[in-house]
Length: 366
Image 1 (cartoon, helix red, strand yellow):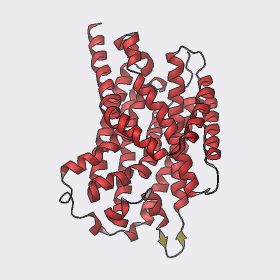
Image 2 (tube, rainbow, N blue to C red):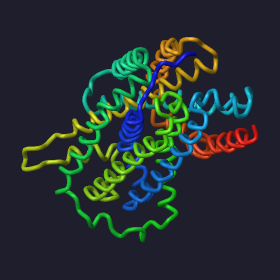
Image 3 (cartoon, helix red, strand yellow):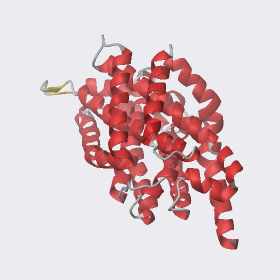
Image 4 (cartoon, rainbow, N blue to C red):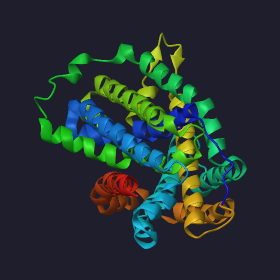
């Protein structure tokens, strides 16, 4: 399967930032605050540090085989059958993330904007947009899109936080560490890294498409690092505005934060900015996962045209996304049985580390 798509280091930076920051801002913060209380920002920093380290691991591995994707170099390193066997958790994770994320996207849009719109209309619209950008531009199209909307997302987040400074009470931040201790802080960092910041291991699929693979580590790590910084600042803003107890009760605390803003009774109702941030970020995330799922599936089954996989995967994703009765219950079991026991120790750390060590040994003694 020939590849004519190329992405730059700058595009990788904005891709990593954009897809990491949106969902992390909305979904990571309340769960982390419930565990670590006013020290949740420390948990986010720890999770982010681990996420940056995992990004380095993934890009180092990808750079070892810059002319192959994860699908190919896993078989080069471990052999055909074992290499394919280790790909199972990745394909499972990619498909599940698409189904869960598009459903969460639809539900948030209904809550924030279109209260009476059927869920299937929102999900169908999202899937049609995904098919269009993936079919027309592939990862190169997503890279160009990220390069445009990434800076916009960054400015919007900064704008919302700055406008809320007048509502912040710094007493909500104290005492630092004393009420929590290290165990809750570390526990609070596990879900963010396993479910969100660790997702940058997808770079094992993207180094192959870079015009300058040697830039993969630095650009991807800076992108994830900037996302971690903005989520940390967002976590602090939520805690300092509402306090840890009230913050943990919100479903989307950053969205509620934006609705709380009122500057001179003139600048109000800026919650639309959070909706735009969420839309852009989730769309980039869905597009990236749709691409690697389609491209990876085509490679594993030796299909000539990966785009045709999108025409099959998109309808399946639509049916599953709208058929699940309770997405919270569905996501809960996904976290219990995959994210917590498998995602971080196996999917994000174990397999990449194994491939890197064995790959270096094989290259040394080849």
